[in-house]
Length: 354
Image (tube, rainbow, N blue to C red; front, side, top):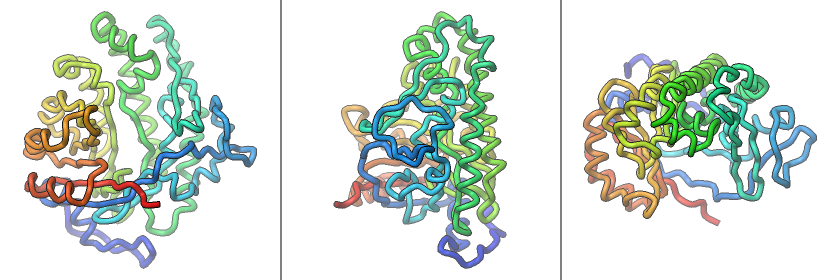
């Protein structure tokens, strides 16, 4: 898998073949990756509008309001991809927007000064499941794919493009019905919940395939938004809604759909949070997902990373693991020494200097 990587033409993004070979070896648990990127400071939401302006006030978004040309070439401070070290940076299709929730029919509210976007539930009762196909907003899907095509067309030779941030089936379902109704359905409406998750899983798969069909290969593979190259197709999926369940209920209700999204590509990374690692046993059992990523949340939202070292070591015994968080160089070194297993990757983000 690590041999035969074709050379790139000389360009600002002409990476050495050794770097791609190292990434391929990481997926096999035979290499380690590290980077110390700067992280742009949180700021007001940058939202270019089709009338030529930048949004200054909160707004309910529709696809036609967006300026896709400016979104295709955003200012560097608006990008979320990690760069430097062992990573391969990629252009990302405007990850601030919850594309899948919008495609599912949720109203999207852009909160400019808060620097975020929020969704409003689209299903008021479980009796509305039959109407889900009619609620799908294909305008948002077309806007996303148009944006991907524009980014590919304007990217310098050799620069990677990755799929946008895609929340997992249970996360999309939570946006569609609200957290309270999702939790109640886990117990009271398991069949309806399963039907909704089947729908959101299909939506995830369709959106990923449509993006992947438009993104050119880089040295025979593709790059995730973490900056990790894979020698084939790759997907980054997640289940933040796992925080709402016990391990047993996660396995019974959410895991089958998460595992489906992890099989849509040849290489998959499942995003988790350090405060919600109670579900990892299910994710470690089989070959999918191919790798795991843990965002290190600060205490008291989660245990300190030092307390989680035994859990991280257990994860590395089964699969490659990416740890990603605001870490000093000294903390990265400490993690590096405490977890000597191959398959470890650490992105130690730092605040951007003034």
